[in-house]
Amino acid sequence: MSGKKAGLVVGAAGVLAGVVGLGVLAAPAGAGPAPVLPKVSAEELVQSVLTTKSMPALAGTVTATNNLGLPAVPGLGQASRFLSNGSTNTQVWTDGKGRGRLSLPNATSEETVVFDGATVWDWTSSNNTVHKETGAPDKAHPDKPSNGEVATDPAQAAKQIIALINKDSTVKVDGTATVAGRSAYELVLAPKPTERTMLREVRIAVDSETKIPLQLSVLANGNAQPVAQIGFSKLEVAAQDPALFTFTPPANAKVVTGSADEAKQKASEVKGQLPEPKVVGSGWDTVLVTKLPAGALSGSADRSATTKGGENVDPSRLLGQLGKRVTGPWGSGYEISTAVGTALVLDDGRVAVGAVPEQALTDALASVK
Image (tube, rainbow, N blue to C red):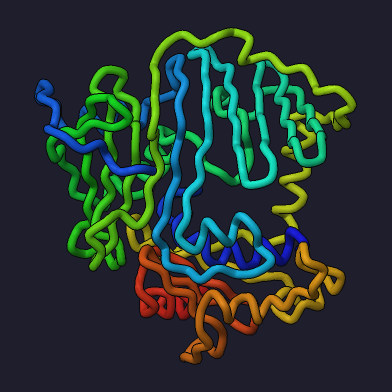
């Protein structure tokens, strides 16, 4: 499947979580008695999350899970399995000084990403190809070596969501918990009564020692269990072997070189082909409205697109598998509903998405000319 068409379907569904600051979604807090910790204010915990710049030296497993309830869609591979209630595990290492390593295994291969302080090495075992990129990938967070779609850092996910919803939330410390063997405070953000949202609250477990977020959980109305989480399921805060942060391409590997500036330029070019989404509302009831390129839904934008099995891709059919056909004051299209939000993908190419009920999307579409 072409990236353009896969992005249409994944974007229409996955951004339901992304609009509230989630790239992806981790095992629940550990069972057992809650640890006894000194009292701390909600304001102190919020500031500790927002001022987190890098992880300490550590090794751990970040588990991301969701219970969005979307159906499995043939042709989307791992993305489909994750969107239809699934989980991913990422092994992470950092040296506390900006260098990092990720290992992302899947059913048939493994991807290893290493940032050695000057170069990002990205090796995929299935085709024995190494992408070598010089320059820091993210100056704001240099120990996050991957610029891919999978969130591997609970601290960054928590920072993004707090920045988005903090001013429209009631904030409190709701006891303590144990996450990945670590004692943590439970920071809870809930929408103010004026917010139109399908979400009930966001819970962030903040490490009592390092003050970094260990886990982020999203709870929706009508659901007792979290509908989306990302966090450490295993964690060791300690100095790591320096050899983990060096990389030598395997024998016979194909090495493709580039630079961070070139990558940013390519990303900018791709972004420039699409209109900037318009933001309607703020906080919990933020709605993003955009328009897809002409022909994207009919398939005329890229007639050569096929699934991995060699079958032709029908974007409208894929949307029909993810959602249902609907009509309204905005015209006709598809409505995709999940536990955390709703998306409308209209026949004229307009898309509205948010962690909100359908009526909020209708209002947002009417307000955007």
